[in-house]
Length: 259
Image (tube, rainbow, N blue to C red; front, side):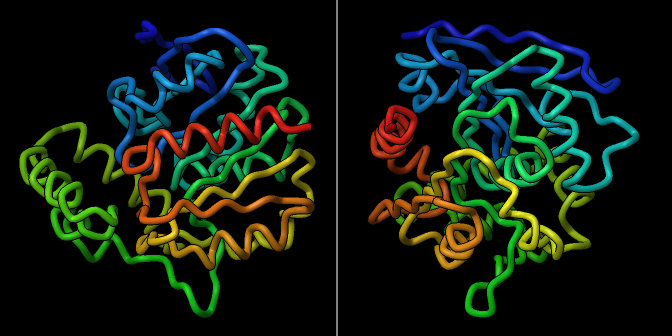
């Protein structure tokens, strides 16, 4: 097991917690709405071939909630500052769900420090046939069945949501998510017209049975990002890094190693 170390860095006036572990090319993992309170098994797998950095977004987990955090663009600029502050270059960026949306927004602004981009189950775009699930009208308990294809995993997630609903961190994460995405319903109307500015090889990695952000959204990303590749993981929902961790990691490793 690779040892991951938790530390803090001050970026844009925000004390930010991040996990770091492994050796090799740098891989920056941007988490979804539930945060990354501890290293997960897929991170251990990735750390066999990468140095993995997994920060908690401003407003999430143990990172501070800065007064400037208002929308997804703020997080995009924050991560460009994060890359610069740590002097990270030739980075493979893997964005899961909300993290994928952040990664896309950052890449259209400046991809000079990136080597590859992986967007997994990322919202941010709309499609007539694939409206993103309205999570703000649902409790975390009600949302759980939409996250997994496997009913057993969905039930485990539901029970965990019930147990953690009074957690200060869970409340903090949800409040920050509402600040970022409630008004726009997880769609940036200007994103589509600028995705041609993504200058690095890009992989759209989706669960074939994702009911939270439908695969049609991934197809639209793929149509707008020059040369983008698309991989669907069968029998898999919105959280492939949990439900199909081995396949998720294998797809990232193969993409990162491709010419």
